[in-house]
Amino acid sequence: MLTTYAKTKLQEEKVFKDPVHRYIHVRDQVIWDLIKTREFQRLRRIKQLGTTYLVFHGAEHSRFNHSLGVYEIVRRIVDDVFRGRKEWDESERLLVLCAALLHDLGHGPFSHAFENVFETDHEYFTRQILLGETEVNAVLRRVSQDFPEKVAQVIEKTYPNELVVSLISSQIDADRMDYLQRDAYYTGVSYGHFDMERIMRVMRPRENGVVIKESGMHAVEHYIMSRYQMYLQIYFHPVSRSAEVVLNNILKRVKVLCASNYVFKYEPTPFIAFFKGDVTLEDYIALDESIMLAYFQFWMKEEDLILRDLCRRFVNRKLFQYTNLNPFKQPEVYAELRRLFLEAGMDPDYYLVHDSTSDLPYDFYRPGIEGTKKPIYLLMQDGGQCELSEESQIVEAIAGRIKVDHKVYYPEELFDDENIPEALRQEIQKLIEHI
Image 1: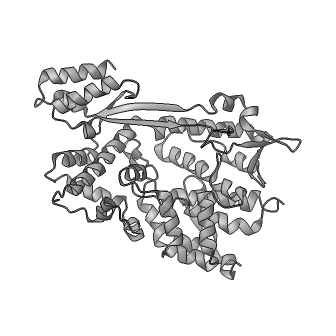
Image 2: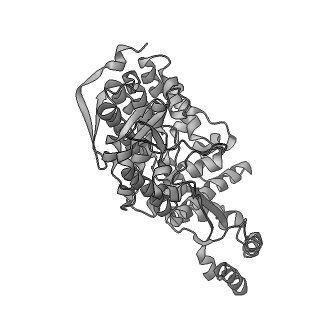
Image 3: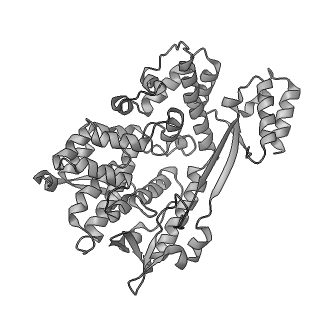
């Protein structure tokens, strides 16, 4: 049973000025209290786009910005579009607002690179923050004792009401609608813009999730193409991936040095628990990007040449060059490059790095294929439902098509390094140029 706290409204509405949604409105005491928690404020110190700011200089926005944006989109849907419709249960309102606000709570610094090296899982830590001894948990428990678990279930997509889950996680959810527009705004590109107002107006609640009125199909097509372009042009940008490769190698090198009992000039105290695989919730919450960047500057003065060089590259944006090479299709070329790099005195584990990306612009449901996502359904004039790609020629053309891009990253200045014999440099350059 919900407490009166769940229904408490602020005496005066709080408003955040936002460059994407113009205003973000907070009327519920619970939402305002969650925003003020230590764990939510930490998201100010986690960039939404990781290393992308080294390519698009405006991309300094945080997961705090994004989380507020997702909350606002969901608030507008349930308060302005769903309210009064028989398929929408008003008692689920606060639950879905909290889930929207807190869905990214467990993200760590430079999330993807960090998770790759230290084998952490932001979804696991989101759950720990929601259910552990945290300020967020204390606020949620004031609603009801089982409320933190319900919020966690919505974020984990295990909550029994599929409609509630679909607002946060589906192929046309508030999360995607915010980050596409927000990331486009801060990177200065036009790809991510689409008619969100139109999409929200044609959303309708149904028992198994949100459906879109047939008349809104063209707005949805625009949204899917925007997502497609954002992934190609922004999220998979090769220079941003180069920065992530360097970042990944810094963390990998520090982990290796720690395991070999290397004596650091600047002891990586905040990272020790991660190296040992014995991370407490407090360890995780305490680490953010400001701490990591400070240590990168400290490590530029370390005795270890590889760590020192990689940190210098990241801090001063001296990133790796790249070439199109798929080691799985050309294993002999990749193996030869590794041999030549070793001969040149450059450890290929750190200086010749394969990276690949892939994404589905629209993944419609195909029975028997694991991992496919629930499709977008159109609500037809006769009341029936139709899967989007069956009606849209544009979506049908890209549905289920996976684009995979393989690159190998390396330091371009090796070609001018006089410490490497000229014949060896020319051999490496010739091999790379003829891939």
